[in-house]
Length: 299
Image (cartoon, rainbow, N blue to C red; front, side, top):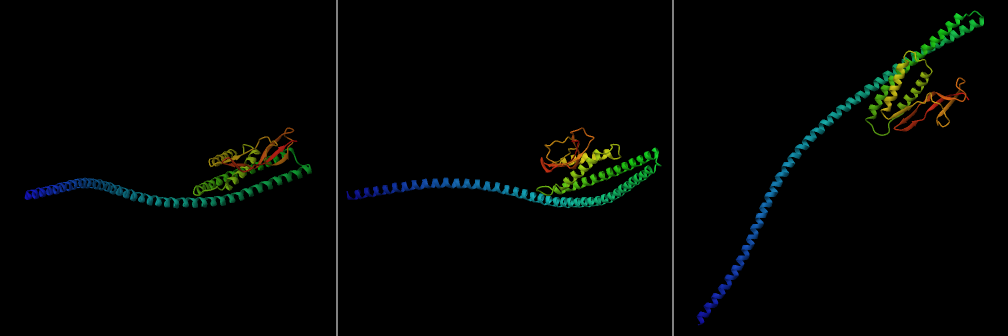
């Protein structure tokens, strides 16, 4: 009996050990399954990461090629800009030289014009003195007076023609200066220099006043009017407005610097703007120079 009891106890102990081992084996199997699953996931993640790396490598290569291409384009643009800058500077220098040459020519021609005017004035004075002496001496005839009048009229016409010719040349030179100033302004920023346009406006004021007192049959009259109008339109394209008040009726509400001159040929009480000393100049709707006018009145 004792031996059987011992065997039974030994069997029970072994059975318990087997159960414990089975439980441990089951736990290990579960851990192995989890480890296999985790390993599988890691492998899958690794494959995904490898694919992403390959994609990034391809993108990186493409971006490197794009950067190289952009660098080449930037280099080409820099070279083109350098060439353009040299060309523009060369053109500006050439324009400046042309402007200086034209200014020298204008000064020379102006000198010639002044000489012609002086000669014509001398002729007028000489004819007037001669005619005065003839009248005082009582030896003048109607024919002499008529010839003197014709000579004076011819001299006056010659003066007007020379004046128109010089003004046409002046406007041509100012146009070249304006073209050069626009080219220079395109390279700079900030408030533009209005001095050249204001100077042009003052010249146009003088020209318009002279034209208003000149016969339209004078040689070069129409060309000067067209050149003057063309200059006004050209500066308008750059934001400038040159305003003429010539021929308008004057009223006390006009806030301009005004010079009044008597004129009995006007109807009584009339006041007409007959001269422009300075034109009103606006830039982008803002006045940069007020007008200065001459008003003929019969009051």
